[in-house]
Image (cartoon, rainbow, N blue to C red; front, top):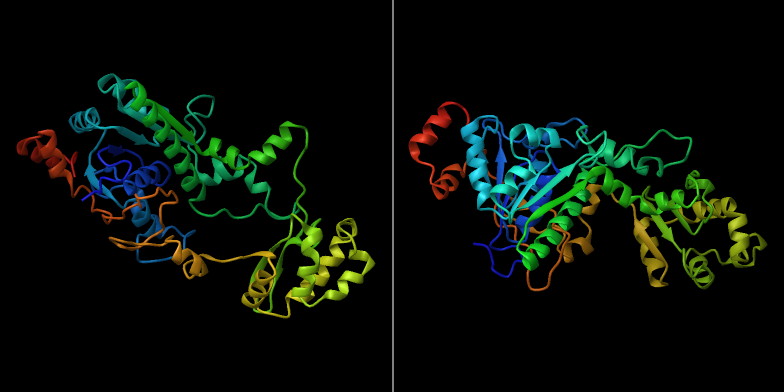
Length: 401
């Protein structure tokens, strides 16, 4: 049962994509009340179901990428290359509010599910398309992954680590998850416009465009002639008070005394039991600390190595010096603040990562576990008026799951 207070209660969303980006957008809408119907190929279904077996991911018997992205959805398995199966999809979108896909433009056109086709049948439809590189330009049909279109092409990959280091590894799916929020915003704007005008339209987002926006400060700087951001090694950072330090237990702490450093400096050195630094001429002023940042980093390295991270967090927090723990995913699941804030709620299939969008009086509901391939087909086709004989024939031909 979908609570009426949820903002998308009463909306139907057709999720006609694969892997993460656009299906994650549909998942967000499902969390907020939409009836989401997942379209996937008969048989093995969306390849995301098997992504947990990829060697670049942490191994598990659980299909955890699928569980995350496919909650709150019903499954309908259709072979979209078969005309009768395609007609079922078209009939479904005739009575839907949002169609979400991440198929490249040429694939949509070849299948006959482009914006012009669907909008001509349903003028109020919000057609939401996610691509690697955008709807136009020479790379409009080029396959895009978060590792390529989001991380590397936007300049993000060259921002982390020292300049002489190899490009770092990227977090799996991170660009897709952020891109899903971009498309979610576009859909929300399109729905608001439809509420005022009655007209549907096309909502778009891309990995490349989202990557440019995430890296907007650096790209805006380059547009202004600022060049590339310096990428020194940790020991050569220009501000020792805005850096990372290894603690006695081997864990890392991010120290952030960026604003109001002059006021915070005495509290910081007192907390780390190095008040002698107050009288050291190398560090007596903000200018001196900047000029001698490398030496100050060495002093801080020695100081932070004397206590465990939790101890430093407590000591520095007590004097209003901002710090952050450098956590891995396992540590993040044990974070007390995350627990209290509801970032890992109980869902139908176990604990999950919460939708990052809040609305007072309308908390997201994780009501339905991911479904088997095509398991909801009969209920969906009943509502469309597809008779049993037609279903049997399509299933025998492998066109319907």
